Image (cartoon, rainbow, N blue to C red; front, side):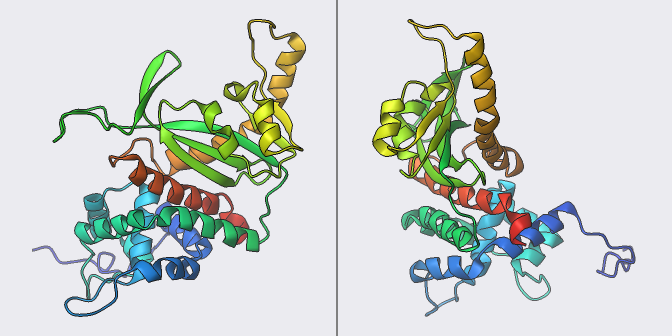
Length: 314
């Protein structure tokens, strides 16, 4: 058997922090662990007869790792065995304890879903950011993105998830869940999240994405012509959604210029979608049912907000 080197034993002469280690160190500093643990603690099982439960903060760290790296329950267990930076973030020493197995991770996720704690985590993170000086401005950007769901029917029911929906975009039919968000036009923080089946029209959810104190409402052409709805929810708001052609009126060159100007602000919402779908890697749904995926969406939105302001909080 080949002898272990000093580097393999943890005594590297030229250590350098990886991108993963730097990212986890940043998020460790900005996540309000104490506040979130106090939120979940009333629902978490207490020690009694039998094996004591894993520490609450450790399970919450494991849960957030699943969101940041889009890991399944078995995938998280494998990554913890392979990645030293992940074990350091969670606080696991393989010389003294085992990695929590996939069943333990799954049960904790079901606990959060059963008590609707994804929504509460999103709200608590919002309160934490407001206490740190990140206030809502008078403008909201509304938009929606579709997260694909598996289309296979190779399951027990021999059918696709009935709670998802199909929509057509760019000449292509897509199947999954729609994530509707309301984003602050200054800080780019998400203040409202709604999950619906994929066949729900964007315009139908507009009134649910406004907080009522807006002076400006931005949106793409899917929200054109909804000035009356905006006035009902936010009476003092200006309708700054993009213009589009209709039967009675074609866009003029001036209208095209107005759309380009408005799109510079409206595009800020895409940064949030980029974090969730590209950086966190959540491009496809893993669970069946709208409730489970909505719970994950709420937690992902909370973590997205923390990621967006991590340099200002650290």
